[in-house]
Image (cartoon, rainbow, N blue to C red; front, side, top):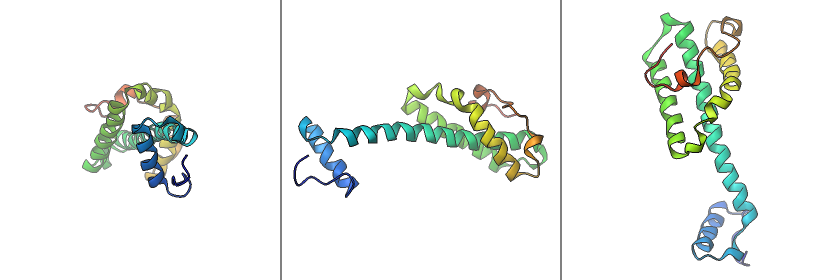
Length: 145
């Protein structure tokens, strides 16, 4: 990095702009490759984290919809639809993440089951131990339990 270049730790935005300029000018020797690699990996983790978080919220609401039929609301259906749409958007932007929800649904379900128990008058034991929904069902915009 050049002497006057902003440090990654001191001013992230200035560092990004500086690195972008070097990349556009193909000044490879001026690129902070270690920090660039870390940021790229962080971006990939961010998309996975978003899918994971949204899948948990989706599963919570699918559980509530299935196990509390008298309390169903438009709000629950709206949350289900929004989480599905947001997951689909991340996957549309990064098709390599298509298999990711299937690979984490069981871990997400454990968190969703606990959260659903907190949000309802039911105990965790009132919900199945394993996810009662397939990933295809959970993500299908036309399916409700």
